[in-house]
Image (cartoon, rainbow, N blue to C red; front, side, top):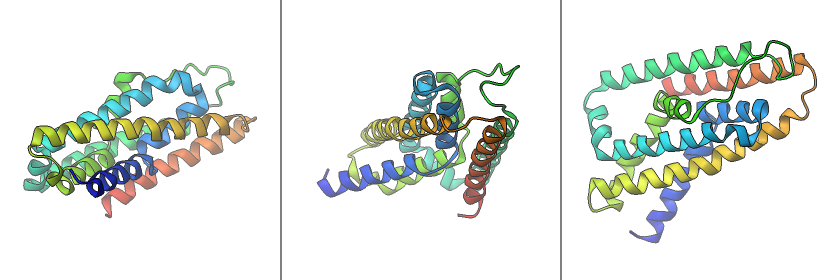
Length: 199
């Protein structure tokens, strides 16, 4: 594998995992609400989910999706419905200090579940498996490389978003400020869904 190929793939995975979308939005929200340490299971779950998704795409799922455009649309529709449900949940959340707030951080399994229903995740991993197929001698090697890089970069990127949310939460003092914050995050989530349908 040439150095230029490695550098290109590293840049691709970093940009793909750090750009705003469903996972980064929820990592930010979790950091704001629960702090970094309590959000780690979510972050690790998303990273594991994205890594396994990249591996599966490299092993042949990307060719299946390209061969059956209807399947792509169905997966995108299911993912969109799930992300819209998450956006509604964000809007309805109260400030962490308000009475009756019984929410808890997402689990590791919840993180995996989230990313496997995220249309952006499928789009970037299938794109990577198609674009970088020449960097490995066989699909198993490609799957291993992509799985490792996507999982590693997701850990770094989501940690940054989560810590940003934790820092920002220190500035939010009132229920109104928390409501605006949650609405803003939900709007970003909805915008990320819209961009997927008009790529």
